[in-house]
Image 1 (cartoon, rainbow, N blue to C red):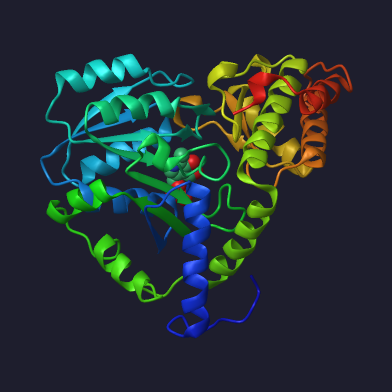
Image 2 (image 1 turned 120 degrees about the vertical axis):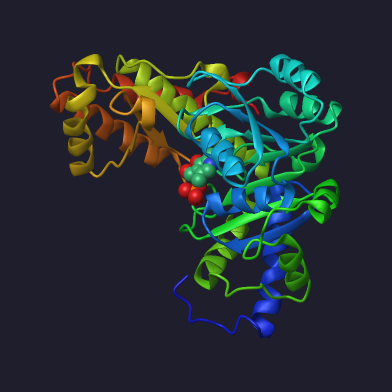
Length: 367
Ligand SMILES: Cc1ncc(COP(=O)(O)O)c(C=O)c1O
């Protein structure tokens, strides 16, 4: 990534861009067009709304947490008439409820769904939800920011019209690039949608990318990193990557349970990329600052709870380049931080539990 800049309207870039597009199509498991913008994940989400949704149009946002709420708010900001299917935080959406909702609302043309809700550590059962949306012949837009490339999301097989991700998640590179796959049906909708768009205009992006360029100056250093990340991912293979994430997540859940902590999500819907755990009762609220500080001093940076979960949970992010030694180091620091803040622990129990889960070949760990 520290390589010198190249001319982004020159021959090296013309070779690099199609290589990235092909690599991303492989990782998204799609033949659809792949658009790349310099932006964080929210920019990718905004591009979908700006290109697909017209002011006043009825849109359904399926929200199971903070990022689902954000997608709904975003559609509202563009003037959409947003219906929300909202679940309590820690739960996943139910395909039957979605089916009922869509049957009652034939005017809903677009459904926005978060695949992996990073604020709660819950992964929606997207395959079943997508089946409903497709049967009901609506356009399906999926926030796959913290899932694509880490959790199986076969875009074409499941009929996902638009899938969005961002460089800082499973792609193992810094923030700054968002990637969006666009189906033929989405292009048709885009041709008649009436929201204002400029920076994120998909038509212009596609035209420029077909010429081996991007409309604006691309985030070149991140592109260099992404090329290497995709090469690492191809070496490991998608099935092995998905398996590894399932195993690492199971290890963190086992460790948390062995530490006497309660998990936010049931194991069947628990995320392979982020694990949300309740802080011990005695360390919740104002006390949580102390334990997060101890963890930080030990070199362990954990996510805090967002919004209604603030001061109640911590979140372990484990996507991308996360391997057994990382799990071991994290669990050790987790245990020491809790112990230093007065939570009783049996030393080594969490690590043994994590190691057992990592070594397990339980079928439930198979994607
Ligand atoms: C599921 C999900 N959606 C959207 C976003 C927003 O992405 P960004 O912060 O890159 O704009 C995030 C960020 O963590 C996310 O996890």
